[in-house]
Image 1: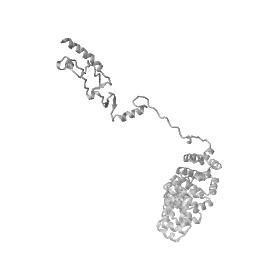
Image 2 (image 1 turned 45 degrees about the vertical axis):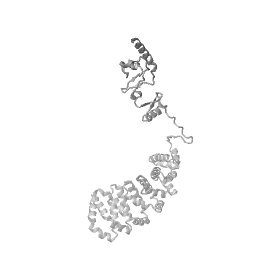
Image 3 (image 1 turned 60 degrees about the horizontal axis):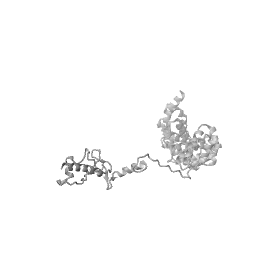
Image 4 (image 1 turned 135 degrees about the vertical axis):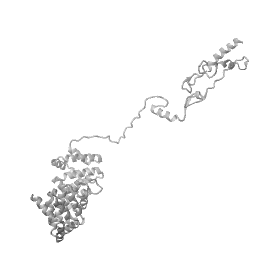
Length: 399
């Protein structure tokens, strides 16, 4: 009985190896791998003591076929994987998006490799490639003022502005190159930056007499006055009012300013928060009120309160221009009455009493002298302390 048992043991040992199949390494719960068909495996699931009982069930002495091993589900497939009928592997639905993303980066699904760069599409044939130009010739930049591109117009205007600031000779050069005609067209450009830069250049160029003459011929006054609109930037107000201040020194330009309604926006800008705008506006008003028709319009626009407010300015040039303007408009009886009604005499007496404002005393006295023509002013001025202020003023100037 012993020999057959040994023979059966050897036969069973021989019959077990062909049953071994390899569908890939079987993953254990601990992360290792195990060859399932090796009878000598340390982690074999079947006890070695029961090997004979399995070979001869019932003790009949007949050889039995080896019983297939049952591999736990956790060992038959790795974590996150499902075993298929042909013993291959498939991915779970949770893993599919991540794997697909990795495959896209690698260039082909399921294969490691370098990231494949997408080829850049060539630009359309009808698109012009960007061109960068550095010009050192003012004539070339003047030609750029005719460009349909807003960015080029803005940069060309900026360069011309810097060139014009360097001296009168440069202003004459720009006039000869025909820049003034083109710039006047840009005053009404739809782009705010282009419009602003063009206004700044015109404000600088207009100090040249030849440029001033050309602007009168081109009749650009309406375009310049339009830049005084409340919605425009302060810098546009500054250079547009500067242009009008220079232009208003000429009789023909005065008429053009009044005809295009330039006085009303100038009166409004007397209350601007920017001192340069105030200075340019009151200077232009001073030039305009030399005409008696303009003085009548000034009364209708109630401009005297705004002019009196300028006497409080911290800038002497603004105070001086305001006093000069008052000195002119008080030649009219209606303006003198408005000055009295708005406590203008109190402002004048305060200036006369202030030693630090002695540079304004001459103009302030001239305004008071114009107001003393009316008997109503004489009656009003006695209780105001004017005679005491006049005495103080005389002592200051005599010393």
